Image 1 (spheres, helix red, strand yellow):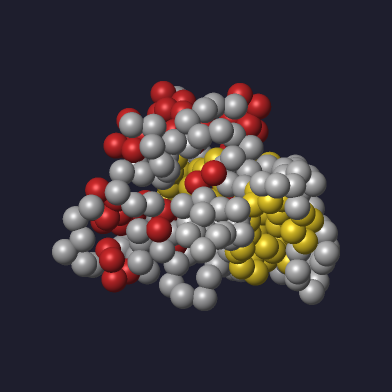
Image 2 (cartoon, rainbow, N blue to C red; image 1 turned 135 degrees about the vertical axis):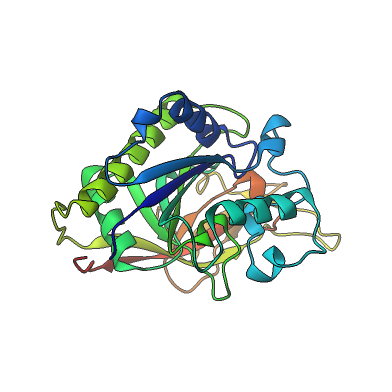
Length: 295
């Protein structure tokens, strides 16, 4: 692993996720909070127009706008499509980024606590994740990479990842989670500084990893309308085991619908408000213990 030279902290990729936006404002008022001796730290408000209007996005999800072919397509002129191109010019180009690490700050209405979302299982980010879980047992680590090229903002550099915190209502600040997110950002920056100084204490304990398996939609009728809700026994049970046959949905007339999988899974992003439009009721993960190699 080469030395870290530039780190980008991004908030407001979704305009109605206020935690990251107001953390950026705090950092920009006192850059010493995120300044470290051995690397430069940049801050960037991802979607300023959506934040101004307290909306997730204006035309489309900015965090799904970073496919290489889209960034190079001059016919795409929607607000987020253009904003993605601006961000890529500032941080990219994709595949040859001007920054070494991207920390993309998000919040969720789901009970995700403090989550680190990784797109690649690189030894460097895995060792970082292992360090963060060792100093704060609340931190959970998810591997969310899809098979095709990623269209997420954090994919602009090799060591990009998201911090996802919740539950927080959209366009609302939660003081406790704001402070926990802030502390987590400082821990990441301190780790990167110590990595540059080669003073990292190696972690030999296995890392608990939640690997993305897929997503399930709500049950729907012939018109595409939702006909069942998240079952009360599952609501807010992110990262907890869901066994075959256990209730997962509840119809409006009170009938339980059981999970028909064949193995125990660990749902995350349960009942995320922003995912209704995506046809996602929850994401399913499998829980793994991963031996993290030393950097």
